[in-house]
Image (cartoon, rainbow, N blue to C red; front, side):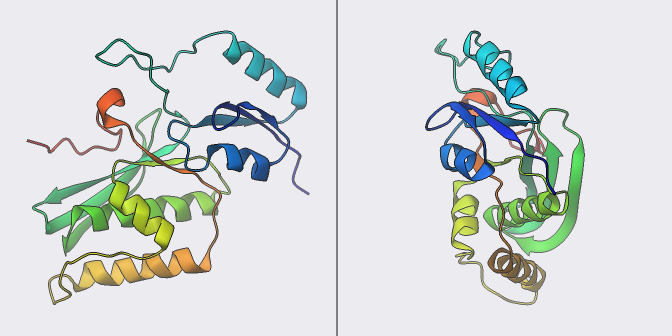
Length: 206
């Protein structure tokens, strides 16, 4: 039997302490800049919430205008695509946001688009975390890919032909996974303007 957990929400629709993941999820799912964490006891949760509430925390980011932005959630997975042309050769990876440690990587898909690669990366992250029984968030900087994941359908104009068959086959497999599985991980938009490039970035932008 799973041990009871208490969820602290610092940044969400209604910050506070919640006694079930379902209640916590309502506050953070789809909320930009959501920040939360689970604790094994109510006392620890209350202490963490009280301490954080009385300080600014150490993960807040200062924007160029001098305003404090919502901090990103360090205990999360960030995904990104490295491509050679768009469309072109596509690879993607997922890293632990805090440490930058690569947790999965897929190299050398013959031909696809950035958004299709990002879609595959998000679904790969969800499957990876489901296998680990982890509900930490997934960050992506592609609003289009996030929308496709939500709809469980890729709506790309990339023509299906010999060169793109590998990409389309992987996309169909990912779509099938989304239709056959459930997940509780929030999928959050990475705020590049305030936080810099996403932690999984390949560093190939000109």
